[in-house]
Amino acid sequence: MAYILYLFVNAGIAILNRDEREHNLRHRINKQINHFIWGGIYIALMIPAWFIIHSWWFILAITLQHLWFFAPLFNILIGMPVFNLSKTSSALTDRALVALGFKSTEKVILATFIISVVLLIKSF
Image (tube, rainbow, N blue to C red; front, side, top):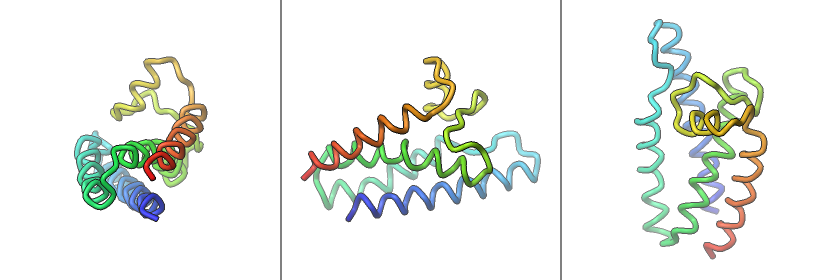
């Protein structure tokens, strides 16, 4: 149940990120999204899961859930292809994937989804 709750957390963060991006573009603010602050917010939102579930496996599962769920949803919300990988993003994950030679996130999304589900099962 908590794993599903974090899908909603990720959806909310994606919507808020889209709104921040649109606001910044409208006001000609160069930085579209403050990834550091949003990362900190997501980490803070994982703290209750630790106190309730007491499982590092679950924390890893919802961390990977963020990778496989948030990125495609955010891309859809801003009108980009689902597996778009930005070469100009300041997000650490995007920069790392570009540096590793990835052209899209499709394989990464699939891998993180599978690993996340395995970790979720292991957490019980």
